[in-house]
Amino acid sequence: LLVTTLSLTLFSVGQLFSQTITVSTGALNAFQKCSGSVSTSQSFAVEGASLEANIEIAALTGLEYSTNNTTFFSTLTLTESGGAVASTTVHVRMTAAANAIPVSNISLTSAGAATVNVAASGTVTTLPVATFSYAGTPYCSNDSDPSPAYSGGGVAGAFTANGAVGALVFVNAATGEVDISASTAGTYTVTNTIAASGACAVVVATSSIVITTLPVATFSYAGTPYCSNDN
Image (tube, rainbow, N blue to C red; front, side):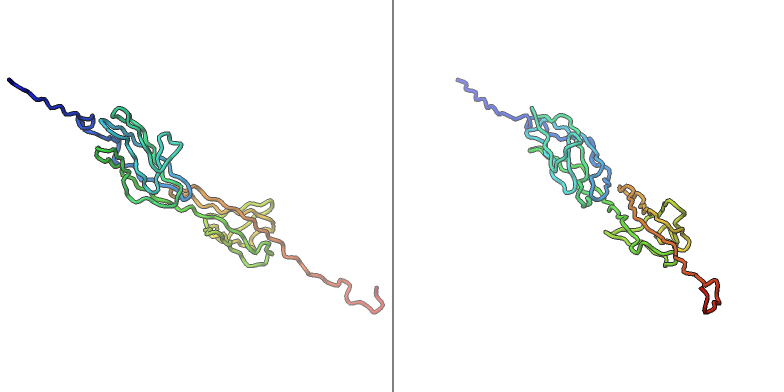
């Protein structure tokens, strides 16, 4: 009598086939942003095969993720169905927080599959402040030449002016110092323009300055000398 014993071993899809996460790039271009705002987004495609779990994109300080480039999250889950994750575009951008991003990896994981990394880095340009004023305004036409006073960390850019009458003359348009004696009396709007730099756009601030004409006190007694009985 011949007796044969059969052994049946069940394998999951992931055990029969290699579980893989595939991305379209191994690195994103370096992000740039202005402080207080988000960066322009970049994207990469992700897909999975023979998986037993969802693909998880881990949090990375300073970055956020989206599948529609509108609503962003600190982490992202790409749902597995029948062992596969369909090709999905993942959008990435720097958050509005002030931190820069050293060269780091966005990690994509799924249980049983090898981790896949996408390199990312980013820099932050501090938004300059252009706020200023001429603290002593109004000025008389014989006053000393004033320079602008800055507030809130303000710095000089390039100064221009406009007014209804005459002209405001600068000793130096790069510092905003006004040449009082060379300027025509009047009210002027002065603009401090800081050029775009890095990811930050042009910054503009305005303030007014008033120059008044020096009053003239010259007089005489035209009929002098007078007799004691003159009117």
